[in-house]
Length: 141
Image (cartoon, rainbow, N blue to C red; front, side):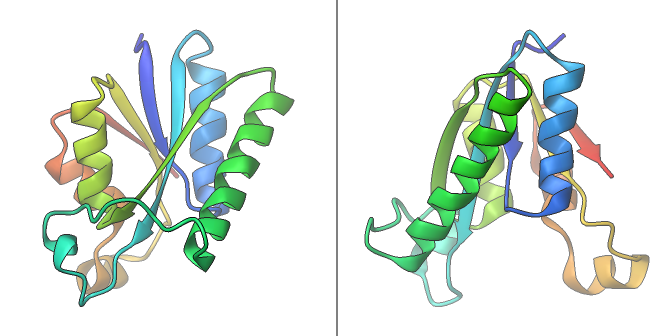
């Protein structure tokens, strides 16, 4: 059983499902919910996957705070205490980097359930995380 789990959250029902799965399936694990604000295409740091902190006065910071607070409350309602983190960059790269740098033993991520054509055209964060991560990834559908 993993002792440290990273759960990316974005405010969607699928990310909430992933958080719930992690809480219920691994009740003794230390869980961290991470929210990534996607960097703009013109953001030079986006190439590395991480551009740094989100300014406290930005709308993205406020929305990120809401998402993380909701995840924290969701876990508390289930009797679990979680940690929360935020970052800005390419979500797939930042999630993988955070999991590897933070010595997490598993990533539990929600899938948005796109059909095959949409996945080919658009890709998905979950699929990119699965391809890039050296840490085991559990995808919740």
